[in-house]
Length: 336
Image (cartoon, rainbow, N blue to C red; front, side):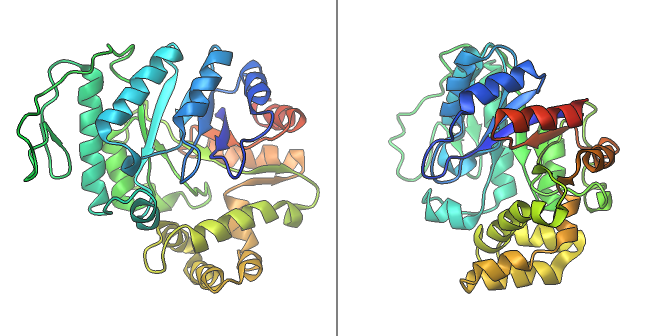
């Protein structure tokens, strides 16, 4: 089991001490540091900074939004950052949801699986640099041939030679069809919630993954004697994602929690959150669900429960430590 450090996306201000904590993570043998984006900070810029102050820790985006950049713009970011980091980039991408795609990025949310497949095919072609880029898809054309085209575009090849032609591509996915496609076209899967006690939720759709396929899982680790209090941060996060990260009737997180056996609870959380009753929504998140997807409790309990993840398809646990002491303690518990 590998260990990762997840910084996520910034809120109102950048996090504090993120550089020295990442440097310490590298010293402790943590495999990868991850950044994210939503509608604030971007995922690439912090990794470029971290690339300059680290030497071997891998640098992953978890995830960059497909709607935010054309596939060729994303390829340019990836090739540049892979050079700056001497080949340490993991390019994690994801479609997000209609609320963000149409609300913030001003792009249509249509046929996300087909769009993702085209996006990955273009990335692979750009990285390979075997020929001038020519692509005729439903969503992307190179050169562009739409009704408003000048007809002056010509196939191009990325000017900067990629350091690696096989930059790993991971995909954030939740729905069964999306996860199955991810196993087919990507090098890794970035799940949102995963319970090692309910492996049947995904066992069939990930059965076609390659032997080298990676599955890093973001999770909250809280070392405490008070388990119920320690679960509160997980409940707050779940209430936000289930209730606020998507529209009623079209929230992939709500659908995922339902598939995991908590349909009534998921609908109730969403209902309360959308009514503005956030505290009630948090309080209604079931403790047993939170406990299954996190590692909370005394150190010995966490060590015992890590085994369930060791016995699952998960290959890396990504923790959100925010102090040197917390980082060292969690690393010692999980890595030994």
